[in-house]
Length: 462
Image (cartoon, rainbow, N blue to C red; front, side):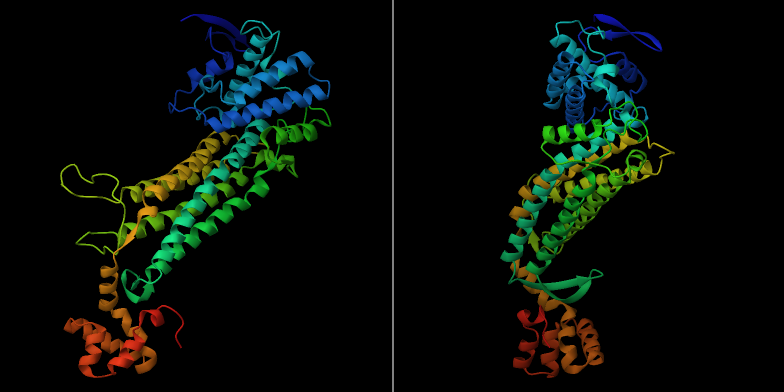
């Protein structure tokens, strides 16, 4: 491999001759061979957008000459479009605050700009990574802003998949609205419920979680760009912050505003923790949904088998004909990972000291990872599982009749104590509530049918 020699304050180092990154990135590659992972594409693109906006802002303030500004802008736009993703080689688990990632971007953009100006990579007299590409910026305002932009860009995709899932569940609620079954609390017989009512609860829970996620736009859109190192805006023009945020908003097509307190926005990561909390809540509700579907579809002959999930793959390498709830299991694991990511973000958020919390690289990795995992997991779960769920009407009807919870429907008529004794006797004798009441001639068949009617039993009835 051919190399070029680059220098920094620590000395000289070989950099691959064809690489657009430079010495700072090379040091990071050597220092942090940790996970084998790369930065999320959305984060890279957001940094590209920030560098483009900064170049435009600096040029408009006459701080950056037009020739360099145009080259940097073009190179940054290419980064924003994903052209140079392969050049972003720094592990997500790197030096605090994300300086290696910011410098990775600065060097790639600088060397591409140098190339556009007909120079040779590494000739930073033409375009310098720090002096020109990073002008009026610090890692401490670039990386948090990039995380916010990435989240805002990914959020609509997740919300769209949540809405698709909500609609699919609501459709099942409509299809199953007349199918009565036994409710269960504590996994024991409880009062009746319609299968459609169970599915309507699931649809509403997804809707509520999506609304909470959408509400985070209000604080995620308040960026600390222009704060530079600690929030003072040192080494920037007095008008730079206003201009660069306006330019960035135009570049990404989203309305951003300046954080009301740049010192807080630079030193605190709790906005990201709050956003992660909404993803955690979604994951919790999704996991319960998956658990319920797995339980209701258990069997097909030795479980509840009230519903049937679509078969997507053979379920065993040893048991012929076995089919598992694979899509629900997948989403359960996705949700568990999101909960783990949230815990990591929580730990990172409390690690700040004084003017800066340096744990942004791990926050970015976990937060964007959660967004994409949920988006992809919900999409496939909706398409390959929920959309094809079928009800087993016979099983639901059988459980309805067998449930001791039907004694509750008799309590207003005969009293709680008598109804409780009736249920105990029916269980002991192996009878249904209906048969036991008729055998004892406690109520007429007409009256009993009225009291145990599923329509009456699944709505207010007094």
